[in-house]
Length: 395
Ligand code: PHB
Image 1 (cartoon, rainbow, N blue to C red):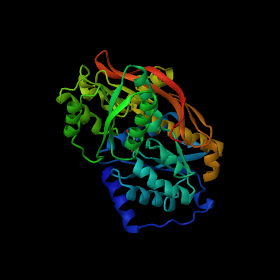
Image 2: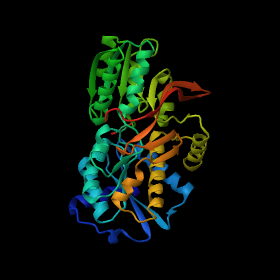
Image 3: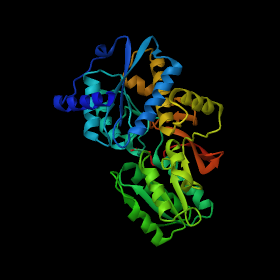
Image 4: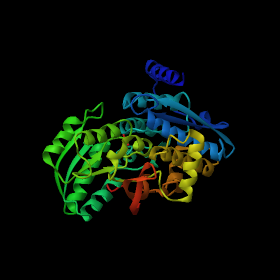
């Protein structure tokens, strides 16, 4: 029902082909602060949207839906997948018709990049809760990011690998923004640390069949592979292909960003994932009081079967940042003042401490090196090393 309605709204927006009107501050004033949440609620990346939305809702449940005397209203819109034209139209409609005070969400880079143009024209602050290509925050002075960047998590992994006896790596990434970032970051950092990249391949974003790509790894027999594919349906399919072709940890070291061993699907990957070494900003198994409380509250709200992943934390922390700005501006949201309020903001997150870089509006955080291990009956990303205060190295 909800899904059908969302899709209909997306369709209506295309018919109306709304342009951008100038928005006076008076038009936005009132008793509510509106947040337009643009996510992939349907299609192959729907699970990611669900995680972000759950994080948003959990934060609101815990902290109330009134801030600085204003009621917080979430307006949800579905891009249905990687669809920059739809994302742009939805963002335009949200700022012109719904008069939102913030744009937020964004699982996928192409959608975030498209909406950033709207944020700039309308001077509406936009909070990126996942999309992780480095360049997104440079696209508009009105974008702040609370999630991560691919270079931010990849460089520490490349350096760890070079320090730990890995000499040759074959690089496999998705053929779009975050994949290109991961490929460049790994290749450059690994080479700078004395390692050799023995080849690389870019795999399509839409419905890839991984068999031929994994066959190539069998033929080349590198010491290790480095992988990035976006969280969603692809990581499990990719890991299954490695297992089917007999490439397990006895013959090949798999290195990846934490997107590939996403906590929400790791259980389903089975023992094929054991021993995979990843780097990322959040593990469901992160050992802190704050994370234990977060995991417990998430389970109470959404059930024990769905583990919160890094996207849930992105939604949760994104709301924390937005609440902070609303409080600071006493409920009167102005784009420029909001962006000034994001600068240097520090948040205690379930992942550990994070900060919004005052120069770039990008997130600064601890990057963890993790290994997939069986703890009791379940597979988890066990953190065993970390680098603190990591900025996006690509800027
Ligand atoms: C992105 O499109 O920026 C993206 C999507 C999923 C991920 C990471 C990055 O897991």
